[in-house]
Length: 233
Image 1 (tube, rainbow, N blue to C red):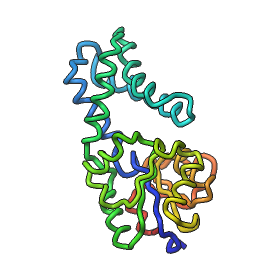
Image 2: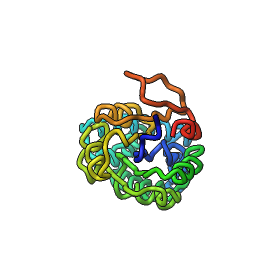
Image 3: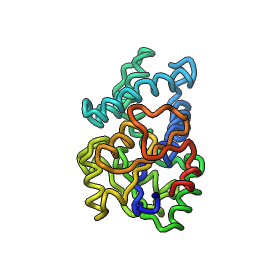
Image 4: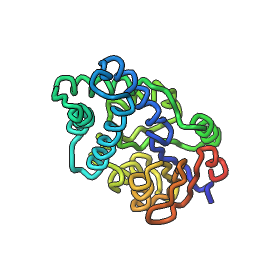
């Protein structure tokens, strides 16, 4: 059945590029650089506050309730305010520095290079479909060495629609000059990647390393390791 696929749409963050590892490393470097230990009990204290607010903000961003500028500002403003710091200029500096430094990080999800080489050898056409910010996604791909695998980089900012909006999937299909039955979406976010693809009429492969239960339906395929894709494609 899998032989029918010609095009693979890959999510980037936490599917191929290890966002959590790269983000934490960046935040640790910033914690030292800006001497945030003077304000926070520990890095863990700062990091927990940041991740808590950042998760909320990305949910709101996906649902078009806030814009990118607010997200980038508020995710650093929130932890600082929790320890009594009201310093918009510092927040702006942290936000800018974070985006630049994080995009330089190179950690990948386990077996990412292995599966991309395998799919390349088997002549699949591979493309990125991401909600990530345009100014950093290209840098992430280049600095991690992933860029050589992909023919198209389709970003929500350019399209004007965020996954799970079916318009970004329709845009991808049109851009690839493909038929929906020839395309499969691979991603780690059930709502954005898997539900989005299903609603657009595209088969899905749910990368689920934490082995969480499927939320509302059983995807076309589900794996807990990228290496398992070899048994499907």
